[in-house]
Amino acid sequence: MIGMRDALTLAHTKIRSKRLRLIITTIVSGLVFGVMAGATILVDGMSKSLTEFARQNLDGRFLVSGTPNYYGPVDFNPSDATLIAEVRKYHAAYLAERKAAAKRYGIEYDERSEIQPVTEDTNPNVPAEFRKQINVQSVAWQRYSKDHPSSATPKDAKAFRALVDPLGATTVYEPKNLGHLSLTLLPAGTEDLTTTSTGEPSKEMQTAIGQGQYTVVPNELVAPFIAPANNAREPAQGVPVLLSADDAATVFQKTVDLPKRPKDQAAQVRWFKGVRDAVNGATFVSCYRNDAERAKIEEARAQAQEIAANRGNRDYVQPDLLLALPTTPCGQVTVTKDTRTAELKKVQDNQKAFEQEFNPTPAPRAELVTFQVVGLLPSPGQANSGIDAVLSILVGTNYGFGAVIPSDSLASLPDTLRHDSLFAIPAPVNNDPWMGPMSQDMFIASFPSVEKARTAVASNSCQMNWTPACESMPFSLGAYGTNYLTVDDIVRQLRPVILTLLIIAFTIATIIIWAMMGRVMADSRRETAVFRAIGAKRSDIAAVYVTYSVWVAVRIVIFAAALGLIIAGTVHVLFADRATKTAQLAYAVFTPEPTFSFLGFRNPVLWLILGGIVVMSLIAITPPLLRNIRRNPIKDMRDE
Image 1: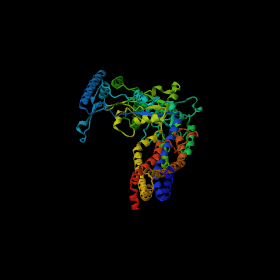
Image 2 (image 1 turned 45 degrees about the horizontal axis):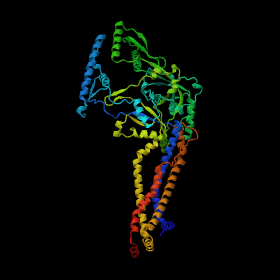
Image 3 (image 1 turned 180 degrees about the vertical axis):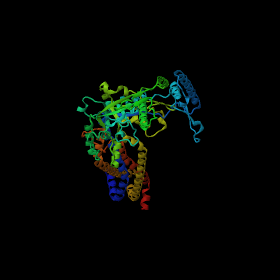
């Protein structure tokens, strides 16, 4: 009987006698597994680092945003003949009301000026059943949809809570987008309304605040980016706002001596801190004008241009009601002359009353809003290399749309600075015939762990790939604030590829080891026959070759692990410092810890790969081993 020590001795002897074959097998099999082991170490290290930065940035909370999902179901079919007929009835009733009101006010009324309830496509390529559709801009449709509310579940905060609370959310936030206010930045606090710009907008007007992109969010979501209060902020001088670093440098370039953004990551950290300190407490002004006031601006501008064009023309008669453009920033249009007759005034007043009766609109309004910078949001710099672009994607951030107004800081301001009535103006809601009422609201949920946030996003995400399941999802979820799930998203999307590569790698390695072991056993037939002749059992022969196979597998494991460590270690040495600086900029975490590491060993896939090599080796040896121990030893000796 061959004992364990003898089996080890014989297996070691075979390894020493077949070195070249063993080296080739180890390298060929180990290369594939080494590359995959290195990739697994890198992915786990990046995931661990992103999670740690996110934890420090948001005080252990992991935020998930939810946007309403309007894939279905269909509420109304805008091409439905029955629906079109109903809306036409509403239109007819509306016209009758308008005619009666026009008669009551004593004014002329032309029903052809109304928005038609149905549009018709004359393109012959469009199927006949789709050529006529409801016009969602018509008054008739608005009235019909009011009388026939949507059957779809409202995509509001209550519905969002019902979705995320069972998934482990601890808090729900309701950011408010102010983009519908169309706040206009006034560079240097001045404006010129005498002309309209037709060229490319200035750099200031291309920023988020130049385009009126503001979002109100709770302080706790952006606390890491709020700078310490300084003398310029005591007392407060305007609505608190957080700008991106690049936007702040662009807007205040002329008033504050700011250097250009450097390319080096370490220098960018210093640049970010310098810009933050320089603009902390700086102010700028924006102007709000509603549609009625903007219409008056256009009328006053047109009058001024008409008067200028007719200067010296004795036959030209100025309008009876002469308007003047405002002379102060964000001022309102004023009346400089009114020579209308009492009869004309009555007719025009009746016309306004007539329109207000059916389409109430607010009075002209203009309001100057002063903003005060209280901190900076990170903004990705231009990538100078492929690795910079990858790092920017991995550690990117997203805190709302454009500039951010901290709601708690806003609420603490005096009444004269808060602009409560302005910020309370609701955003318009589109009543779509297909999907019902549609809004651009966004909600945010806080989860206590990355695992719960990952689970919530994985089961309610339609942002990247649409599937039939999306139709039943009221909201599409995604990571908010920081890209702490980026690595997970990448792995999830590449999971089929990774599994396929693993299967291919294990199959190829199994074939290689199978062929090698088959050759080894074929070369050792005489040796096996001798052992069998002197009394060795089949199990003894199997023990020798199983030991030999495990020994080979261990060598492949060591080679693959070493190669994986070399690959991951090289990436870590070359890019860890750069990644740390990029993450510090993105997360506003400037303390020495944490640092970004590309090394991670917690992923079970790594140990699955290494452990799988041993299992694969045992599987590969089984067919040739069974064939070898079943052979007749006398016949093998005779053949030799």
